[in-house]
Every structure is written in C-alpha cells, then in structure tokens.
Amino acid sequence: MAKALKRIVGIGFGVATVIGSSVGIGIFKWPGTIATYSTNELLFISFWIIGGLLSLIGCFIYAELGTKFPIAGGPFVFGRAAFGNAGGFLTGWMDLIMNTSAIAYLAIAVIEYLNQIIGYQLHIGFTSCILIILLAIFQWQGLRKSSALQIIMSLAKTICLLVFVGACFVYFIKSDGVHNSETKTTTSSIPLFTAIILSLRAVFLAYTGWNSAIYFSEEDVNPGKNLPRSMAYGIISIIILYVLVNLGLMAVLPLHKMAGSDMAAADAAKVVFGNRGSLIVTVIGIISILGVLYATMLFTPRVLFAISKAGLIHGSLSTLNKNAIPGIGLIIITLISLLFASTGLFFLVVSISAVFGILIDLLVYISYLVVRNKKMVGYKAWGYPFNAVLMIIVSLGLIIGLFVEDLNNSFYSLILLAAGIIVYFLSKRKGLIKPIQE
Image 1 (cartoon, rainbow, N blue to C red):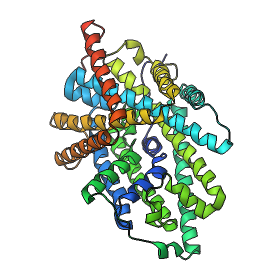
Image 2: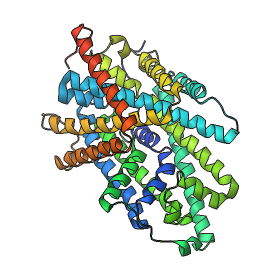
Image 3: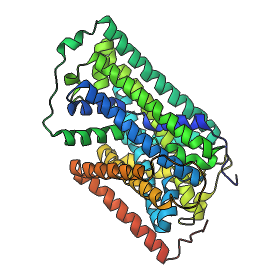
C-alpha cells in the first residue's frame, strides 16, 4: 500500500482537467436556450463571454484557496478552514453527492446517445452502471495512467469541436452568408434583467467543472505556481472554444432559428452535413461527455480521502492502494454513483447536482472572505473583497433561479442536505467522529 499521494502532475494535467470537466453537452444544449433570451447576435455572444469572465473571477478565488491549502479535497478543505468541522463536513457531503450524482447522469447521457447511434435500446440503468464500473477499473491503475488518458480525452473533444466550427465557417463562406437574408431581430417576452439572469444561469451550467484542478493540489508538483496558471489557462481556453462554437452556429443558423432549439448544434450540423449531421454531433457529444464523466470520477475520491484524513469519517477511506490513489474512496463513490444511475431518473439527478454545485461555490466564496486575512503566504487573487462579494451575489441569484424553475426536484437536494446534518451530529454524539487538528 502506498503511504502518501504522489506529486506527479503539473500544468498540462491541470488544464486538461479543467477542460475535461467543463466541456460537455452544455455547449450543444444551451445555445438554443440563450438565443431565446437574446435580441441580437452581439448580446448572444456577450452572454458567453460574461459567463466565462465571471467563471475566471471565481477561478482566481479557488486558486488562491488552493495555494493556501495545497492538500487534496477541494471545497471541503476550504469549508473546514473557515467554518470548522461541521461546516467542512457539510461542504464535503454536498460535494460528494453532487459529484456522484453527476457521474450517474453523465453515464446515463452517454448511453442515451449511444442508443441513438446503434439504433438499439440498451437498458439505460444497467448499461450506464457497466460504463461507470469500467472507468473505475481503469482509474484503479493510478493517477499517472489516468492523467494521460484525461489529457488525450480533453484534446480529442477540443479537436472535434474545432473541426465542427471549421466546417460551419466553410459552409458560411461557400453559401456566401445566404442565411443572413433571413435574419430577424428576435424579441423576448420577458424583461431584459430576467433574460440576463436566465441566460447567465445557462452559461454557468455550461462552464461548470472549471474548479476541478484544485482537487489534485496534493498531487501537483508545484501547486503554488501551477494551480493559478492551469485554472486560468483552462478557463480562457474554454471561453475561446465556446465563443468559436457559437460563432460557428450563427454562421449556419440565424438567431431566431436557433432560439428554443433543444440541440442547436445538431440543427446546424444537419444544414452543414445533411443527414449525417445528427450522427456527427452525437459522436462529438459522446466524446465530450465521456471526458467530463472520467474527470469527475477521477477527482471525487479525493473528497472522501480528505474527509477521512481529517477524522470526520472512518479512517479506512484515507488509505491508498498500491498505485497511490484513494482506492476505498474510489470504490465508495462508484457504489453511490451506481445507486443514482440505476434509478434512471435523469432530471432528478441533474437537479440535485446543480443545486449542490452552486451551494458549494457559495460556501467557498464565503470561506474566502473568512480566511483571506489569515497570515498565509501564496498567490493572491485580484479584487478582494469585491471579487468574492460579486460571486456570492451571482451564486445566490443562480440558486433562486434553480428553485423557481424546478422547485420539486430542487427540494430533494434540501432533503439530502438535511440528511448530511443528521449524519454529522449523530456520528459526533456517538463518538464516531474524531477530528484531527492540522
């Protein structure tokens, strides 16, 4: 058994993890929603840029915390530093539920797309469970092999999207921009402020996952230098990629035709590639989702590892296998993900993950305000305290939006949060929790 996590990854892996965790089906799904709230092309593109810049502000906050606390575990570590053991445990609990539910719905999405390609209806719950198990088996081999595959998958999805964008631009040039003659000024039936909030919520969902590099702080050869750079380079790359994809979509589809589409990229692909368009987008979608799924499975065991190392759950979960990864943690998160995936309840699982994701960000930004003035060296994010205040306001707006749009499913996340509170205090009362002071 390995005794400690190995410092073997650097900027390349960090960038690949950020891209791999973020660029999924969102870039295909959300353009149609955002086009619905956009009155012109400039506003449409502006939403994607603004969302990316806000993510960049959040990234610098995460990076500062990651360099101040260069240990595995991500938000749990920051929550515990700011709010003590109870606050840290609840942050870690939400992070665990969010990520395992994300693993489940991503696996379900892969199988649903695969069914479209093969023309045969594989059982969604069972087959998605098999996919999760196969990925877990590969990750058992250690971070060195897993990081190499993560880089390959991130590079593959980036190349696929750039080729798709290039095809859209070629079509536009060959058609002499003929669709511009059809362009109409779209109108929205909701107030501009509401349209901005709803659009930014959709954009934020597309950018979700950019903070993934911080989970590997303890395995980075130089976290003080690499974390800020890898996260910034990753998000800037995603902003550029997303803007290019949306420019490509607008080169093929006028905005009013894109508006309301469940999959604008598929609509554009049909125009560019004919009947093969849906197949091409489906394949790119599978590659993109697999990258996000793999990255999420890669960093989630570090959450359990950190909680266990702090003495807030059974100590066995902080043990490493012979390949220096949290082996028991990987088994546990796989089992929880299988439980979620076996339900086949895609939208419920997505809603739980979305609510917890934003709540975790909110707690991290508040944590940043609490610990910022402690005497610790390291990278310092620009704009304190206004950067954190801005992101807290944004997070609160997104949480309210989620509950307004989907109150029933979002309510289940509160039930799971309450369950975490009960688990913590019952465990503390029975003496099962023995916090370790650092």
